[in-house]
Length: 465
Ligand code: F0G
Picture 1 (cartoon, helix red, strand yellow):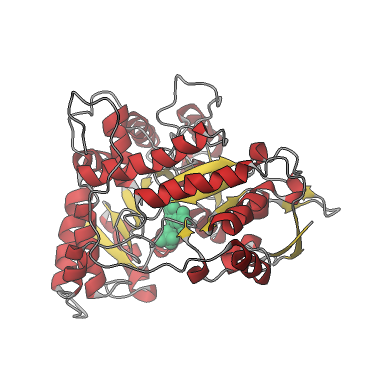
Picture 2 (picture 1 turned 135 degrees about the vertical axis):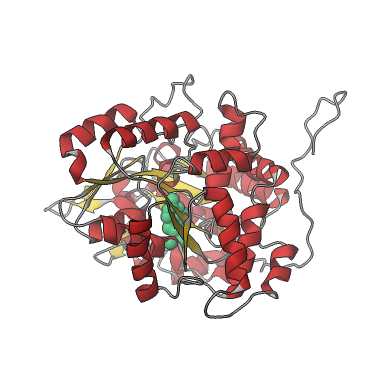
């Protein structure tokens, strides 16, 4: 809520919603959580969700639906073909994307499997500001190569703070020339750029990427599961957009793409769902074939009628300016609060998550004792907070002598579910960090005692050193 001009102190960031139904949370003690974490092999993925107080593991599929969405669920038309709910969803998506072909899928990676399965193959190259993990996996699975070229900045370069999710346009041209445009299957713009700290992409960057794609005759895909959050950043940080609505900014950006992939579990404001939309008829025919073989008929794909109703409503609600203001400010409040306490955070704060540099927070813990993992475990035992390590547990590899090749940085992501936690929960999380700061001279980390061959962070087990 805005202040009147005469007041100086900023008011508390109050939720633009009130609560109609509550989900009770189990209140646990530190001793209880220590026991549970030990039982889970010190892997927070293996905890029972009911033993978690604030779950910041992901913002994907973890949001709360509105009363209007729940009411919409009752209107779900479950007809196999031509359901009313499908017509509603298709209309909303076409209005947003201006793309004529809309394919509903059960989640984002199903859309990725369909599109990249068709575009990919051995010898093909995909270039992106940053491929999300499942995007990369779906591309590499076809034998193609995925290359990330996010624009790099010096962390202390405060001049160019605003759009750190941008693709490096110079490298883009160089790479296309080097690989040969005939081998480049697509340029993928991820907005916001999840794996680079949830940082936004500017309209100017998107337009330039479009021009480069036009010059070389390349397909531009927008991976836009956080397109509404990105639009808020464009409105408030990019010159010339202050008077535009976030929805019109999203429309302008999506109009630049040839294809749009959306995990609806984020800005779709639903717990499950995905979309693939296309401009080209021939490509859409191929994708529709794969949709029917692997997901479902064209008018429901991987979704039930009630899911399509909820998504059609969610895609409208997410562009509510009051909601988006609250959403981005709430994430920033957490990030700025942590920074003020002296916690090293990735700066500036992105849209859906705050990233903490645990390597800097725990300088005495060597990378092969996993400082990010130390923080993730401590946040759970101290405060019942669950988050995800994005460092050497997730991305570390071993050399031939079994020595750890560490990740670039030892980060921890606190991803914030939409409309789930209140400002008091965020303040509680900030309080828990006071206990974390007391552990800064900690010297002991963890060792891995079991790990599977792939994606070890999900099921690895650890022991405290
Ligand atoms: N693209 C991006 C940018 C994503 O962040 C995700 C999921 C996907 C694609 C895949 O979508 O999960 O519906 O299949 N991100 C989640 C996360 C898992 O925690 O960041 P999905």
